[in-house]
Length: 504
Image (tube, rainbow, N blue to C red; front, top):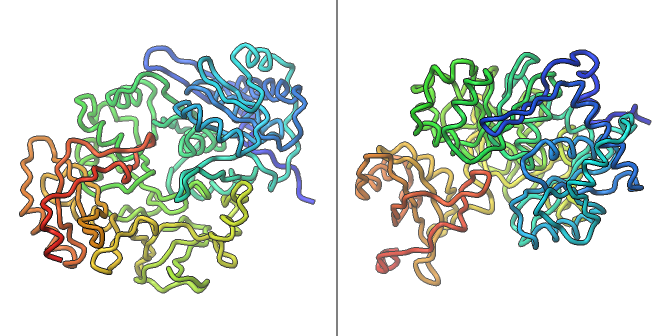
């Protein structure tokens, strides 16, 4: 029988004993701020855990969190885990229908809701009851085991409904390789994260990781404003800043994004979508700081990255983090890893402590992603001779052009280097019922005048003919998800001229 291990205790209890007065968490709206030391945060979590335990919920019961980006959200997440319950983070931006689906699918027995938010089918813990539960005498952390469930994250996929990804208490141990090899995280760091608390990127990099190292975490819950990030970095002396590439792109348009305002920053961290080489170069030129990219998924978080120990190679997210077993497996099946230079699906060995316990009540989905001892995600990539990963997109994003499979990420990477291109997305579009062609959606850089003929020449110089876009659409912005990823399904359904298809 394994020794007890509780994720919340691992993040908070030792720090409360060793560095009780150190600032653990700062929440700010840009004007006011709320600071908690490690001793205060530990006490607040254990008080709320005691309150939640008083509800009579059995260990392992799901408790959904449906709040704004506030302190109550962070406390609820860690208190659920501290009490031996399963935290279910959700976005405050979900519709009522979406929230109700999560309650029903997870079998959640209670929902912690802030004012104005609801979810049906479970007990609602409103602000008044939350305050009552948060005032209980503190309890000890639950004596959970490493493989006991800790939290449940719902993620979008190819299905029409999101599926739950269940993580164990040990997941925090599985995050350790990224501390040195992506984040470069140490006890004296101040981590500012640009994401909302419900996102796994924020829960992990923005909260769990700094707490596991005894560092300070900062989250912003004010109005959307791309100019706020340089100001917050300067105000709080942030040494690390984590965001999606789109945030960095917005920052660089702000006059406040200067080397002086970012003087405290050691480097920036980026994940969520591919980092364009042009953006990487522009940030370094403007601010004199590196950006370190990581590739991950809800099922294991980030596991491939550049960082202080892995030099950045523009266009690649980096190498598998030391200590992880990562392979490229054939697209058509099998468990034998492919040699460098051959394209296939990225796989992670199921022994990785950061890997999920499984999909929530989806045994068929579990079967689909395991090949023997390997968990196989949907990213198509190859490893080069130096161990760097080169992405070719998602398996379910691959386009079919004249019978060839083409990665949108590969075409996007080429177009991102074209002069005057600020942003790009590529998708397959129907020219007629039986013919699909590649379409590129282009955002011009400020002041740039783009010429379709020049873009075609650029692609012809770098891509096989069948990979070249047959049509270009110039747009002001690209549709993105709430987390900053390109929303391919929302790209315009547009096609002209009609005779393009006749040329195939």
